[in-house]
Amino acid sequence: MRTRWGRLLLVLGLVMAAPLASHAQDGISQKKQEKIQAKKAKEDKKAKARKEKDDWKRHLSIQDKQTRKRLKKNTKRANRSGSGPHRDGWLNGLFGRKR
Image (tube, rainbow, N blue to C red):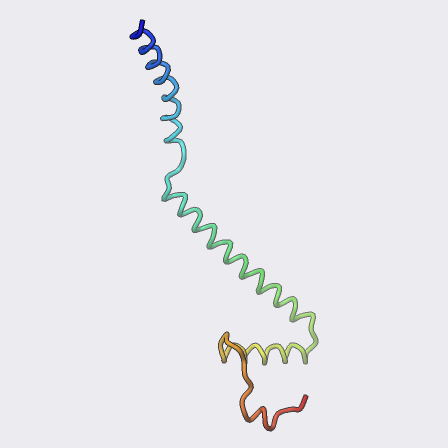
């Protein structure tokens, strides 16, 4: 009696486990998934940079000429001095335009 139930449970266990083993090989490999994700991240980054550039161009096209020149000058100055806080030179402080 015990062996009969044991065999029955063994057969049922094998029948239940067989589909699980076949499903394990249906997906794509982890390396391939990582490659796909890296490629998607790279494309998203490019698309975001392109959109920001287009948005900036549109913003500039709306401004008048003086504003565009002022923005360009200040952007150049900011890029020269880096991303830290900006401080005017001492000559500009002494002889610069009064606000």
